[in-house]
Length: 389
Image (cartoon, rainbow, N blue to C red; front, side):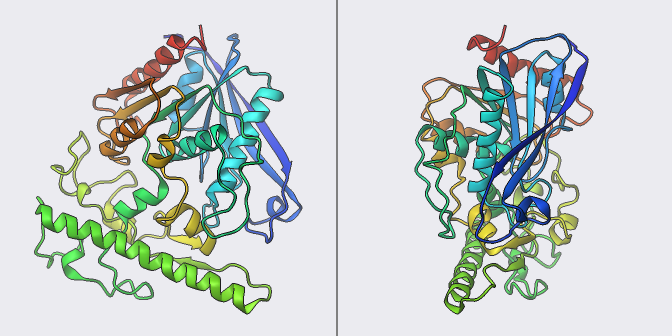
């Protein structure tokens, strides 16, 4: 595989936007424009008419190993930050789709690329599938909170190829598998049901877990999500009925990292280590301030975390016939192996391929050979499709 020196070039994408209220902090959300910051990562002395586009709903990926690895191998890479980069408190997935569409258009019309490969890595996997499904057959005209947002007139440009790598089905789905179901009172996270508390030594259910208890645990997780959604919908209705200037409200969701798979490796076995998650010690993450969905607005909950989210990888994959490559990292401690396989099964594409990178972790930390193998799989597949030499 080639080993190019790479250059990093800042990219700014700007377009008009007229939100009904300001949802992001500062200039970006208050002046009638959206400003998106991305980075073009180019291999020196390597031309291409194909660009690999990465986007995560809530963070930037330009410093992650995979984009740089692709560029070092001779590929042109565009990493895209959404309007919610590094702060998903008010994130609306439908608006992230519009942001991604702006980058795809910029890559084609301003940068001159002929072909686009959408790279759905980690949390970007479900976003990529959501985008491609709406680019091929747009149907969404409002957010899950009922706010008008028309993707049918957004002019989204479909990608030529889609890659789903080390990714989960969707933010709402992964939260439903991680949220702590022992919490009985959202306003008092210390009020918990012992038999559902993974971190309570008095809980009689210990690994390896009984299958009936796991089913009860999973049902309780979904039940907690649904209770929060009902409260959110009721609050939105109350604010609308009341009128006035308060259109939105933030709230906290406590304890959102409790997955039996972290402690029982017989549940969806792979190469991950026990008593660990991708953010570190699961108990620390569960009670800490930086857990997923910890801080959210009402509308953001509906769009990205609730059971009514449109960004569901399974349903979106079923609407996409674009050639699809799926790559599972066999020792992933963030995305469960079942997620990749469910996407493969659900995909409507007649041209789909799946690879497993044995022993690879989520971030390829201290695994340069695994990163190179994964990058090689992507390049080989895209080359077979005729998009790169």
